[in-house]
Length: 253
Image 1 (cartoon, rainbow, N blue to C red):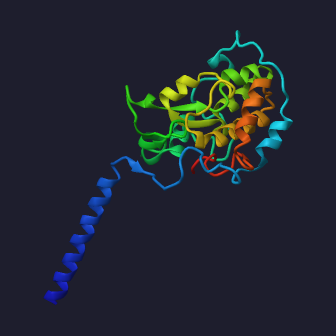
Image 2 (image 1 turned 90 degrees about the vertical axis):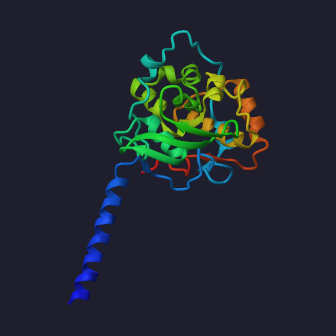
Image 3 (image 1 turned 30 degrees about the vertical axis):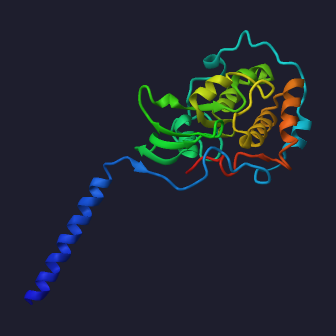
């Protein structure tokens, strides 16, 4: 009987330690790493699922850029970053910025359900690896880029879209990617004729994303923009068009 009591006592003690460990772990930022490839890079040639990028480019209207003089980011596209997007996984009560950080970074730690506290970005634009930590003076090292900039979208047809559609465009995961802050700032509102990622290996994916966004929202391309995109696609060997459900585009649940 004494031996049985001793065994039971040890079991109770072990269970208590387990509960204590679980309780402490529950107080720490949640690690949601899943090993997924970052930054939408799975939408390379042959994996987009939306047909041929070159074929879709041929269908886009070609017109000169419109005026940007009346463009106002907040008035025309809404506050950044709302949950105003109907893509799979959207309307999840998290800000779009956090959704994209969680999708594109690895080794992600969350504070609560939504807020990304830290992670690591394999930057698609520069090829650099960037450690991200939320906070004043550090958050902007990783920024969320609009693949088709909102200024360019405004000049190529978005000015005629309903307000709700423009806000959808501004928060659409298909048009958003986590990127090196200085690279994003250097791009500004430029189209592909004026700016392309420094990393040659990402250019095919980048222009395919631009084509997909412009096709989805019925935006046009300028003559110079189309020529620049066509030149990139010439070296892409059957680049597929990404869709909102493509791996690397869809939000994580």
